[in-house]
Image 1 (cartoon, rainbow, N blue to C red):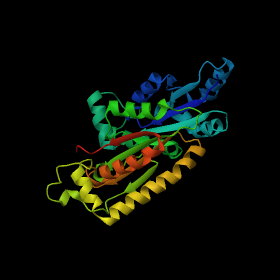
Image 2: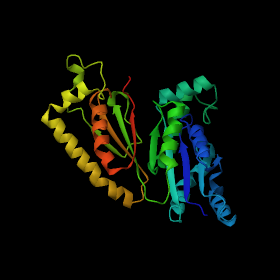
Image 3: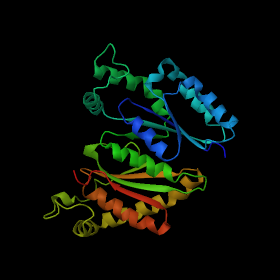
Image 4: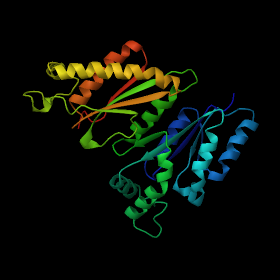
Length: 287
């Protein structure tokens, strides 16, 4: 064996990096939190010298690295040319959510020694911007519970291998609750007729047959679903060819309860004939 996967887990303090590293541990990854940036090449070298005992590894790197953080982008670029897969996962959350989490845990922010917590969070976000821009996947955990964050990582990396398999995650959401930053493809269905204003449909979700019947009565709905299914089906082989193992397709409407849920269910029904590994989540259906 030799190293096949290296995941750099980074992002904002309080965004759930510890939870993510625990998820990787459960998946059998060799995990190290807060490894000095300068030691990352030595760590990789040590893995190969040891005879390939470590096949998959995850490293937690964040603002605690201090001035060494400036070298992280260069080191990651150097690692990408080696014969293993490198994934940079960036976690973040809204400022108000981070303030609440630090207040609840009563843990100090790494940069809050001489400044108020909101100022420390803004400074950290500014310093991490170059790392965020080179991330392969960005996850906003503002609306996720600890268990949901862990499940997201487990689903995404459990089936990763060199077999070329692709896991497709279909996600419905409401724009008023925030855009899911982990999406690879995002579609807006707010142009469709809104069941929220139809008599008797407001309390139902997009999975109910009455809501589906209402939406499918409109020609634009049927045409959109057909074109969306054809488009995603067309793209899948190209993502597989590029070695992508996880594809997130997000569909949003205003509240995330009717049109987006309906569209995700319709897309899932169409894609199942391709027999991919398919995950469906309706983030805001109950809100």
